[in-house]
Image (tube, rainbow over all chains, first blue to last red):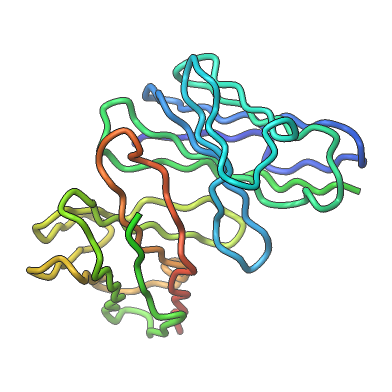
Length: 116
Length: 112
């Protein structure tokens, strides 16, 4: 079945550094990908919608200059957490929408970010 | 997106059927009903989705009320691996398809 690969699965970084997370659709083209954040014992919160070849759309309260999203191809979107701080520590999850539309959404296995 | 209401938690015994309810009284005509589940420290996993008719797949069945204001996810024989948080989500068709609003979901505990 369709697979979304997210990398890395976990990362530890120092405060002030930047971290890049990749989300790839492995066997389908994804015109749209979505980035979520999940804090412990909470539900997923949508951060932004990533569209291939255009600027991402950010949800209210999400800083676009801090969470840089690039969707340069139909199979790859990246989320860069810039100047990370301990409060950015979270579980980041991407999902991809098949270009055919109205099909099941596929999620990556998430990236556990810990900022020290 | 229209809201859904699910019980916070449910329990089941292994090998028994589980019926997970979801209320969505404000559903619109073009909203699809999706179910996803999330195991600890993993991304959500697609379970099943439907629009109006009941649906079956290898994982589960989805029973949709005639007025579409509620639905039930049915796991026919629960296993320990089915212990997860189950999310019932309405997804509008069109360009916003895929932009999900997750509620708190139902935590399913399966007892051996």
